[in-house]
Length: 223
Length: 223
Image (cartoon, rainbow over all chains, first blue to last red):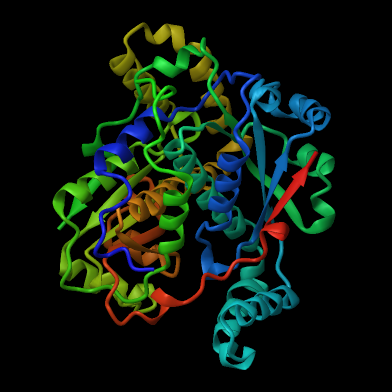
């Protein structure tokens, strides 16, 4: 697909107006659900997130069961979004990597693109050097969590463009989420979560001016 | 601004088509520069990124000086995007937080929204508990880096929607970037970077099929 001769799907103004519209939704309308087609697009957007080496060291848990959400609530500072939002996504990042998992990724590349796994040997070596060596191994959870945050950033922007409200949430006890979602035994840990749906009419934060440090401070131009 | 009665600025299909179009650009056309209005929109998108507590514990360094980019190149595995892309952004995240910086953020909230700083005391206490206590202090760099990655995810999606190519880059020596960009003395460290511009006609990766694990594996529906 080559877009280079066509117009971008959004104008600068539309992009910025969507990002201005976005805010960390404190009160969701519990009665409004995200339509299936919209949710399906957001799941596909998550899958299309960028990740280091393309390795996708995460899983996205979509939690709709009200009972489970009620059990997660006390471990998320009682933040009501957990139960009121249409959808809850928990981002689970890998805590370790094995040679077998790198091989499985190589196999997936071959499956999608064709060619021979042997042709990807130097790529495999590079990944192994980064993820399996004694000295790098302890950085794996840090690295994997960061990749999950790219997906979170992508999801927030994608949702805003589809006019779906969202609230990213770090305030939860990861060990309890891991236990309730059975993550540890699978080599994952919950690193961040995001509730999505539609703002309640009365959410006072919806109208609040966005607080940012001046661009002149956040952005430093060099050269 | 209330979008709820209007159509979203993009359709599901347009969003996904942009995310499909996006790829980690290996070869940029060194002759093509991002137009000023487009770049300005991307900077504003960066500023509008979500962050924990709204604290924006990062700076975005926009490096256009060719000499500096040439000096960064050897510390970025010689990846040619560093010098060929129209723009280079280095995401610098805070390595520590002080009570004074939390106060400055409270002042900024009052400046933007009005009201009294005293009314935000419980908010200030919550941030202080998270960022200044002995036991939490060592998590600050981890937390700040993750916020920078939300901004990266936002930037990648925003750029795709404006039909600007990008390549997120983790492969650099942070200590050397910090030194060349004079970051350490200011309490920041380079955590990730991103080059942006337009793909070269000959970049063979542009046409390669996107490799993702099956959605049924990456996404787990619970409930």
